[in-house]
Length: 401
Image (cartoon, rainbow, N blue to C red; front, side):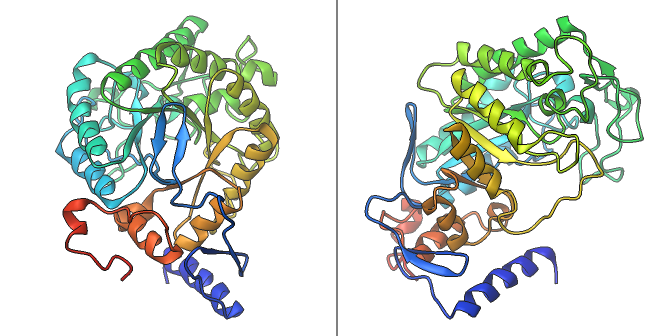
């Protein structure tokens, strides 16, 4: 039995043990079914953030497609986003998109470091918008994890040498994440400021390309996260050491981006809310950082975990990261997104109804089933119109089946 089927079986077993079923307008929490209260937001309630309204609380999490040449979007990216827009998700966040060429994870990752990238991206966002979903983009710099072969390359994950189209990775410190490849070069203060400016320029291009939500990637051991965590940041200057210094790059990047995008454009930040290792970044650190970025104009924290070290022991399972979204939402007073092995409609509905997060972000489950939102609408008893494209809806009049 693979991991997905195991977790689905575990969820089903929990439901069977209670002898309960999920009826319209109800949700299950730890095996207990309770009715949704009048006016209480559920999975299919709209979510308004600044000038943007999502038709529901289901978002496609950024997922690298490793299918670009020189950072350009192409037909594959259009097909990938189009399927999930037609499938009914409220927000589609494009993959980790390089703000500079050397900020890509692989030579095949998407980019937005030059104006020439804009028209191809706008082709994608125009389709997404025309089918009722909101297009978002995750801006990223891979840092010490850059210049790697894509997953379906024979040498997957290995370092791409410079003479084969790769480049020398950079980071807050000259410290490798993996054993192969060269030691990354430590960024100078001037270069850090250049990266901050690159985040801002990429954000401006993203808005010009039609993206209505901008997310900054400060998770998973990439450059933003590597400044935050003591496990990767060994600097002794103004960007290392204390919590205040380690969050300096984050705050400067947020300020620079917020300054170039309109007030009605939502700004998200993805955190690795814990490193899962003693001495690393913690939930308490994430709460403190969330409070700081909220003051600078960030609207939602996208709550993931891990990525700073290969030695972390992560207790993977359904909802294993949701408590971080709940904790930051409560302690920092900011909207959050929950992510990680959220696969079942009742599970996602419970997260929203319980107030543990404002948005549910899904990755692989939306790859398996682009029309998952419609299945969820049927199963949890959505009281809004079904999230299904009109081109299909006329032929599927009995939408509860």
